[in-house]
Image 1: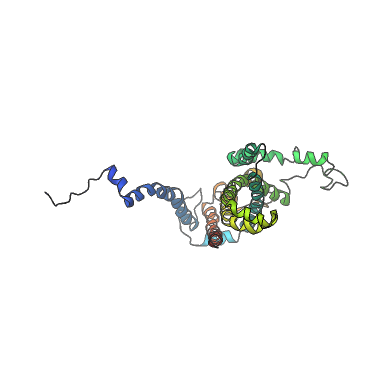
Image 2: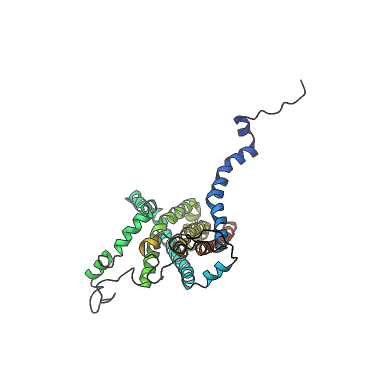
Length: 314
């Protein structure tokens, strides 16, 4: 009959023409991914942390906050928490400084620029487990090439050598050197990602602003600290955020190189949660240790995003 609207026929074309329905369909896979791979394990970790479950007895008997009390009284956990912040902050400060230098270098034209870019990106593309094994050989207590070069230069192995009279430094056998080693490897691993992010930020800076500063007589360092750095601060904040999250939750480098040793001097939260919950079989304490990631990451992420937002607005 004329004058009577017909109900729309549900079809694929109808879905594509309805913006709200299309948005729901397109966002659904991402929501399902987050719920399945993040939301469900997170809720399960909370339940386990409130119980006394172990791999030998996985029955869920809720004990309240007793497990968190045991974790907080564990000296290894407190050491791991401290090491996690030292490991993360030290490596990310080095990453930002080196990435800034590399990004400035890659902005210039020079022979072999593409090869240099490839070599810089190589650590990010290589599987970290394989590259960490390579570093394990570099830090070997007997056959370390770093120690061999130091001995050849007279810096190691002599009575008046700068690095000591012993023939090797034992990189992974001494607490300070072991922490320095894992920080170095993590810096090497995250550096390519930060370099690419900062390089993109430098490319986005209008060239006429830099030319105007140069015409006004600003030298390299003045342009760097008064023009480039303020405009690049939001991008640097995002690079630091990505590196912080990746490093704070990572255990691969520590697990392959030191397994938390010597004497837990390089133990971090991720590795301790694994050792406690998986290898030791205490699911409750392992989950409780892992849950400490949430407040730490949430606080740092909020702070960094606020700094980036304020820098972007200003």
